[in-house]
Length: 349
Image (tube, rainbow, N blue to C red):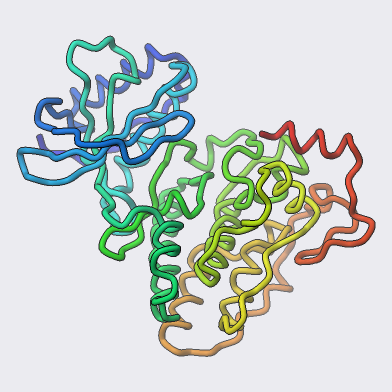
C-alpha cells in the first residue's frame, strides 16, 4: 500500500473509541499504511517506558530490520498519545533527521483497542544519543560534535516549520543510525496552536524553569529551544546534565533556582554562547531554530563570528514567571526555597 502524504485531521480525541475510529478511517483513506501482523518476526524487546514497549523485528517482505512500538496502560491516557504520535509522524517522518514511520500493524484476534496496535518504525542500530555519546565520545572530534548538533537542529527546524512542538526533547529521544541523528518519540508533541497548558512532564533536566514556576505556563517552540540548549551542552560534555543529582525533584529545584551546567574546557566560545542563549530563563531571549542552525553552520565552515546582539529584541514581559533573585548560571545565597515552594514544584510531576 502506498502512503499518501495527505493531511491527517488534527482532532482533539479524548475517548478511546474515537481514537480507534480515527485510526480506522485514516487506514481506509490510505493516509496510514496497515500491514499484516504475520509479515513481521519479532525478535526481542529493545526498550520500555512508563507507557510503551519497543521491539526489534524483521519485516519479512523486504528483509528490513524495524522497530515496533506499542503503548500500554490506561486506554484513556494512551489513546490520545498514540494518535498524536501517528499524526505527527505521518506529517514529518520523511525528513532524514526524523525517525521514519512506515505504518501500523494489529495483533490478530485482539480487541479493538489502541494497545492492540503497533507502529512500524525505522530501526536505529546505534541506539540513542546518550548511549552513543557514552560509547563514542573519546573518539569524537569537534567536527563530529558540530555535525551531531546540526543534524538534531535540522530535525527540530523541520518540526517547527510544520508548527509542531516536540515537548519531550532529550538525549534518549534522539536516535542514531549509522551515525545519523534522528528525532523520535512524538507522544507528547502538539501543534503549537493546540497547546493549552503544560506542566513539567518529561525529563526534568531538559524542561524549562517556567514549567516549575508557573503551573499554567503555556509551552511553545521556545520550550524545545531550551531542551536543545541542554542537548548541545551534553554533546560537548559526553554526559547527561545534572548526572550527579539522582532525584528528579532535586534536579527540578536546581533549575528553578537558576542553576545550569558549567561549560566544558576547550569548548568553542561561540558554541558555549549559543547553548547558553538557548537555555536562558527568559523564553523571549532564546533564539529561533533557524538562527541556531545558521550559527552551527558558521562554526562548521570555520567562521569564528560573534553571535548577533539580541539585546535590542523587544522582550515579552516574563518577570512574573521568574523566582526572585535568580540569574542564569548563578545560584544566589538567598535562593533557598520554602517548604511551600518545594511542594509546588513537586506538583508539576
